[in-house]
Image 1 (cartoon, rainbow, N blue to C red):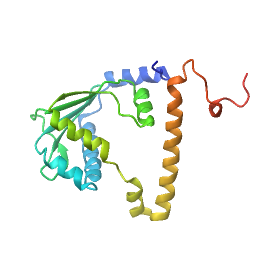
Image 2 (tube, helix red, strand yellow):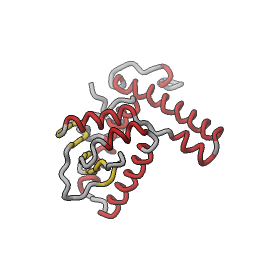
Image 3 (cartoon, helix red, strand yellow):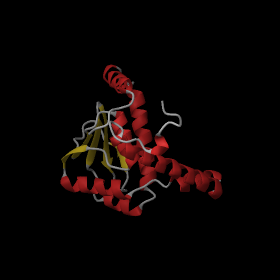
Length: 190
């Protein structure tokens, strides 16, 4: 049984906002460029990921969610760059879940979101490998800025918070009509 958003009006508001109002083209372009920079930063920390992506040079992947789209092309260096508007995608990955609430629940559980895949099977397999094996070492990046000890403390706190969110998300499917764990029950029930 699928869990509904605890704030259905937020899902509706987000849906109306995303359908009715389009962000300016310059903002979309800038956000996409920032995303590419972040992805390349993570890829540069993984030589195997760069080697796999370099073998796919020139291939274009398009990712979609609702009306939002981004097209990325693999470079000979094993990194990504924005694909030109005339470039056709070799692979299309479309998130099939419209609700941001449901996507947050999937992410909190550590699961992959539901995706519809169309196009080059080999390229899809390489993208899947990247998703499964490449991780951002935030603690390492923080240690360069603030030192090892504070970065480790922040990383430990973030891991605890993520674990707490995973545990909370594990109870979310049972929240509708299911038992509420003792830790989540109110102190003074009515």
